Image (cartoon, rainbow, N blue to C red):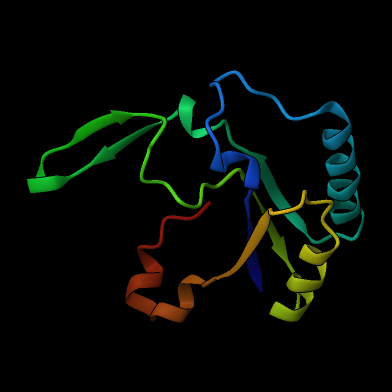
Length: 130
């Protein structure tokens, strides 16, 4: 089963400049954790994201696209990055998330990624996945 572990960092709950970078020591800790995932053979992919102040949103009110540049004042939980892992169960995904060297206040949300065949043959045939 594939699971996405979504990092919701506490640091993104306050204004951060678009060019903000995490502490190098924290990056090293996270690198070691990512290596553990790789060595265990469960990591499919991972990536981090820039802060909301460096982003943009496209909303579709009334069916027309509207672009809003970050930061976004109404944001309560902002994604800082993710890991896509393949494990045998949600419990195993939770165990991996518990090992993450997260900062106090950070949250990792775990969500299973459904496989195309779960939606039936018609939809599975049209599923866009590499």
